[in-house]
Amino acid sequence: YWILWALLAFSCFLNFYNLDFPGPFHGDEPKKVGFILEGNQDFRHPVLMLQTARVLNSVFGFENGDRLIFLCRSVSAFFGVLIVWFTYLLAREILEIKYALFAALAVSVSPIMVIHAHYFKEDMIFTAFSLLSLIGFLKFMDRPTLARNFLWGLATGLAFSAQYKAVLLGALYFLIPFFWPKVDKRWLFKSIGIGFGVAFVVFVVVNYPIFLHPEKFFEGVNHEA
Image (cartoon, rainbow, N blue to C red; front, side):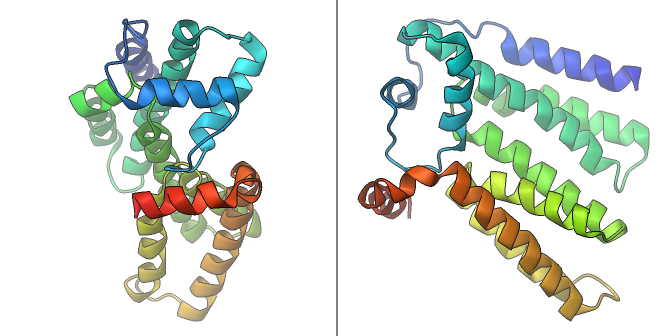
């Protein structure tokens, strides 16, 4: 485990180093920081990332965009570290420890991962919760309990609350009963239905502003579609 902790510390260094670089190198960052300061959104993406940054900023109280953008980038950097950890946990489901550690190392130094961890974008938080959803599903299939079913649904709901492309994750789960060997398909579809019910509740709670501004929500969804 000390190797895993060292990998996570290394990932933390890579992701948090130089987060205070000047200027909006990514065109979406100023807009999203403005959303946090103004308390609105355009629903081009679900709002989990914005809500997370708002909760953190309620503690720090940054009103200056330059200081707030560092906090927002820190959200991405943190979830980048979680991605490395979740990669290890997922790899351990099918690989020996040394190969799972290598998989985590490969992800931690992947340029596309480290670069995205430096920008306030939805990709990091979506990837982290997608991995957690997959891990939760495998744990549930290994030892089915209602609690594990709910936890898997919670992780899936958070993935849906991060990016609309999570519909592909949902499609994956609906296909699994046809490929999982020697499983009661009726039971598995019922379990998936329970998980998606929990996921729907999580999505509604996180994205409650859709009920305040439904026209913006449909406009955002149509744009992304």
